[in-house]
Amino acid sequence: MTSGGPYRSQVGFGGVGGLAGRPPRDLVALLAVVFVTFALQFFEATAIVPAVLRLTPAVWQFGFVWQLATYAFSGVGGPSLWIVLELFIVYWFGADVRARLGPRGFWKLLAWAVPGSAVVAMATEIAAEAVAGQGPTPFPFQLMQGQRVLMTILVASFAVLYKDATILAFFVLPLRARWFLWLGILIGFVAYLGTKDLAGFFGICAATGISVLVLSRRGTRSRLRTRWLEWRRKRLTRKVDRLARKRGLYVVDRDDGPGGPTIN
Picture 1 (cartoon, one colour):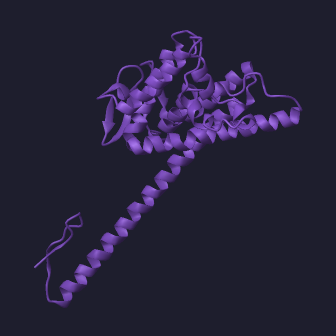
Picture 2 (cartoon, helix red, strand yellow):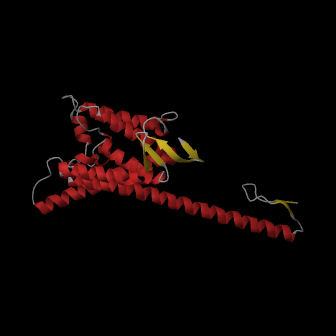
Picture 3 (spheres, helix red, strand yellow):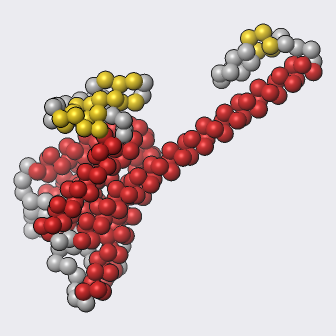
């Protein structure tokens, strides 16, 4: 990995970057919850737990509104090692996103993107049922359950935050990070062709869009704050200059940094 200042310019995929440093405890806890709920579905006595956490039509049919948030933390998939790869991807991109946003910003991103994506998917399913004049799709929202929506959010966020980085995918294929913004949508569309889960696909698109919107607003606020602080600095400098001239003082060492000008 090479970097310039706090911004990463090149990262490898598979051994550095997101795996460097001490693992964030909250991110590790998130992965543990997803894996545990994934495992619970394979036992008859505990299968009900992930079932009631996942996003289902029960949200509007029976008032299971908690599913709008909990579905992202209920692992999904068959009994294969694929879950390990998916969780690895969540950690890989999640660690970098969290490093840039901080713990508070990281969870604020999820707090907006997770329920927001669910609302869009739910509205899509309701509209599709109304147009088709039939009951719910047999397996709606499957494309965005659990770690899948987390991957979409974090990969899209990585693409926004590290857009000028170069990803060495599998150590050999250089890709610009900004291209990853469309990765979740592309994979979701290919999966939609096989599952016909329109609501899930719209949820994936919404997860990408909301992530970009949240981070764009954050960048705008940061730029506005920087400009405001710069205006205050210039205003203070002019005030000190006026005071110095009024009292017959003069500046012996002008420093426009945090210390401001020194007068004598």
